[in-house]
Image (cartoon, rainbow over all chains, first blue to last red; front, side, top):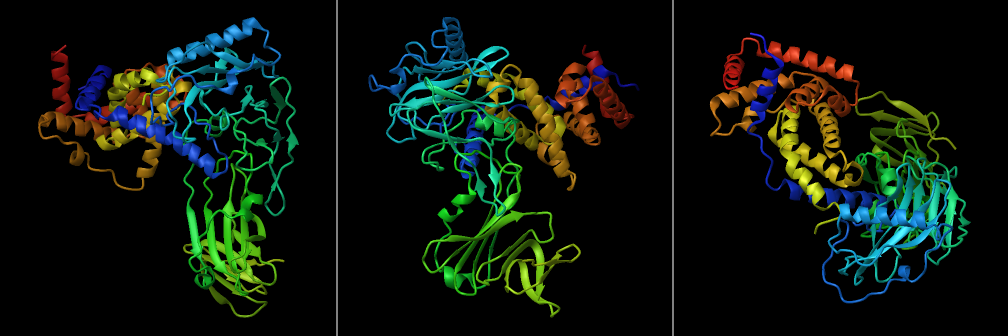
Length: 431
Length: 174
């Protein structure tokens, strides 16, 4: 018999009649959604691109819920600044959009009073603003501990449909430290608006690397005028090359850009998994003892203080080892966005501090992705995950160097790399 | 704690999750995988709510199709789970179970985009334009995919007593 379209509809419906949603789906979705938000921030933080401003989307916990009376906040103490401070039409439009934003997505804490336009001004992307409003309740927030939420604040960006309120963030009674202080505006995200929070800020438009893989940035002071600075920057549509930090520039002093997450995760896809490859070379136990691998300051020159980055799923390679003269050896890779991975080797004598001994770039597609010559004739560190490694000196015989990673003698001239299911390649150790 | 998504997101999930779960079920052929898939997609909607709140269902459908397609790619290397093992519910009428298994088995033989086109067009009763939006392809491509998928299903069901009896029942009940 002929099956009609209506038959197909009926069959598909009948085949799914028994399907009902799990009763706890909504709770699970909400919990999972919050975890995703937190995870994305954690990833950013791990890459020293901390978004700790805690936008009000489930990131904060409120152990307390009641207010404790009037609490002051410095952001309400001043009249509107910026060259549009007197533009009543624009300010009215901004306040309307603000109120609509919170009518549509009401806050548990409630709002009181009127929204205060802290700053409003022209930018090459169009008029922009920063708005804050007091909350009716002042619950304690989990971070910073002891602080209480007193207000919400957000940048307002120009769009073809008029002003748009960006992600609101909570403001605590100790001020806006930790809140986003900047926003990337315009369809190309090439206008950087930075609020003047009273502390000097430095800015770097582009990220470059030196030949040995160190971060190479040029910072310049941000010149604030009437409450903010507007900077033209290269387009930041898919990745963020700009860096902003209070002085002195450091990871701890990073100035947060409110829409960094939106730019770095445009389709809300999680980052690709990043496999961790850890190897301990022969002899490491003797010199390492029970010492832990912690965040070593010697890596700082390779991390982008003030920048925000993702990764492309390249492996994170860690190697612990010992040099022939008894120094502790630590290798690590770092990779940002779609940039090439970099590899750094640190050495430390005894309990002394680590110093960078060698570094460079990694080509994970090469037969021998990692090949670094250590100073003082301490050897050549090589790594090729899953491969058997052999070396020789000149035309001498081949020596077994184990699998995955090895510290070869300094005078080794060639490495033979034999993948588990592949053809062996011979690579010269180079200068 | 209620957050800035407010009741709007909750309402969306309550109102549309069953329909989306049914789509996920036919896309995956596995009840548990469908629930996992839907949860992943709704979490994605939660995170992106600000951007998608005007059209959350369209966004969710696109995400379902994309994630299901990725899942198919992953599962292509291992055998499909036996549907009856996980989905059979004792109290289900035997005919219903048999029909369900026949439908799922037939759908699983379709290429992913044909399957999605058929499910969205005939289960969700979406317009060709809406299916095109969900599959990120042209309306012509949807018509072609749905037509081929339908033809394949007709072949799969040809001579099936279950479907014959079902179509007779469904017509007589109209």
